[in-house]
Length: 276
Ligand code: SAM
Figure 1 (tube, rainbow, N blue to C red):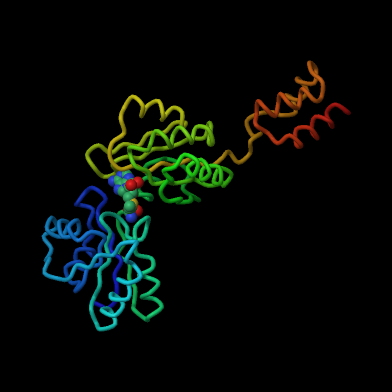
Figure 2: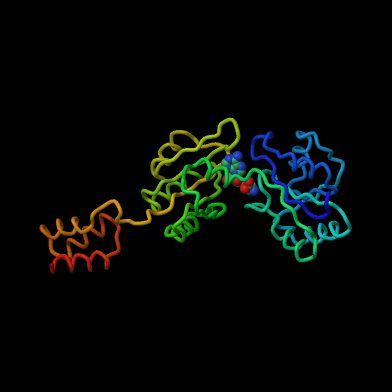
């Protein structure tokens, strides 16, 4: 096996998802960099792998210091495997500083791909996959949560968030204020016995999960905003109809409120129609 560091994905719920190459690398590695040595040793035991090797803890708070140690070990010829508790390392998990340190110090970096919760969730969701944005964990504080949603609401892409089951209802409630009628998808317990993926508006999912307590691990996704807000309605007909019954000002106000459209755009169009 070539010397260097290997970023190794591990299962997110189904042990059968470990790859043949992951098994080879984990078995041959001299050092395993992991988040929690107990969790990773347990995984090694379940997979029947040799645990007589060095397991080094790599967490957000000690990543700089541990990276230095791991770079030295790699430069002295050790094969390093980097794993997280589950899934793909570095994705909402520690590790990117270690990889930077390796690259900056001439250590070869390899990836052994495998399960990644956000990709599996997106595949299950049926939401557009041509463009998406992973926004990490949803903040826990009410204001921060809403700020994040508001910041992202106009981005024309599928949004993906990691979430925990005990916070899901709060997030869906905030989403219903910001994302309104946009389709939302909640993927839960992916690759495990109770895997499910439910779609609806945030308000619909809020009421579903109020009745059915969400348990386990969760990914929440939001469909992109409709590209053309006017695509499904004939705005000119609507303006004409409103102008028959109301003044220009009232007609514009009614339409803007009802269809959540840009006021200037509606006003300019209404003015033109009125002058026709
Ligand atoms: N690096 C991992 C990955 O991307 O595969 C994710 C690590 S992150 C600390 C853990 C979060 O990933 C969970 O809180 C949940 O949001 C999501 N997750 C992990 N496993 C999952 C599963 N089986 N089903 C649904 N979500 C999962």
